[in-house]
Amino acid sequence: MNTGIESWLTQRWGKWVVPYAALWVTMLIGGAMVLVLALVSAEVYDNVVDDAGLANLDKPTLGMMEQLRSPGLDAFVTGFTNIGGGIGMPILGSILTAWLIWAGRTWRPLILVGGAAAVSITATAVGKKLIGRSRPDHADAVPPYENSPSFPSGHTLNTTVVIGLVVYLACLQIKRTMARISLIAAGAIFIFAMGMSRVYLGHHWMTDVIIGWVLGLAWVGIVILAHRLFHVLLHREHAGPAPTFDHPAHLSDGSTGSAADGDADGDTDDVGARGPAGRPPAAG
Image (cartoon, rainbow, N blue to C red; front, side, top):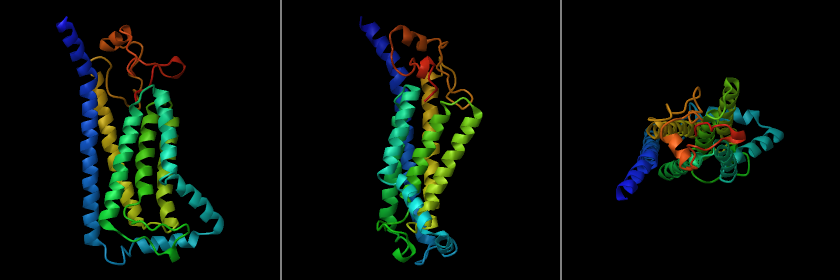
């Protein structure tokens, strides 16, 4: 009796606890690396930026954006940039994550997007506190004005992380190559536009935005690595390789080994779950 229980516990441990532990450990280590990168960028900033800022980049870019302003465009860009703010991005991210959870029949998008967003928010807070860089003067900005520290751009960093991961996970659910290309292009344009909107409105310097992009893309890459490592550990013995754009639905009806055993035992986790319309779920 005890042997049977121990065998069952060992099987469950190997199937779930170890892969999820690897996922969390990789994300925690990667998150620490991103925070260190934020600290390094802060130190570099202190060493290379004078009191006036990077005059060769920040001020000319802001001046160019001021020449493009008009009342109608100002109102449009203000509305757009609010999507990436402290209220808009959590709402948008929650809606997109809920769709990914429904489409893939798995809670892992919540872990990936939620955990990644928590780290990006922390990195933003750390950078702002350490640098304390002033935003452009209100005379050069479009109201409503913002008075918190400027470096790095939280709108840019958080949008890069959330939209980048949503695009990655969504592409694993989509089979058409052109649809994937369109989705990636739309995500890239959205991220770029969000960053530039901060400069256009005079709420951030260009260097704030650039660092937001760099930190965000680095963190997205680490989270994707953690996701792929999770699938390697979870499915290497019975369900093929980790998810890729060419092989997203590796948890198919024909899976053998412990995946099939899980179905036979009434396992209702996402390994044996069905996707929308009865299709096998894409890897997520």
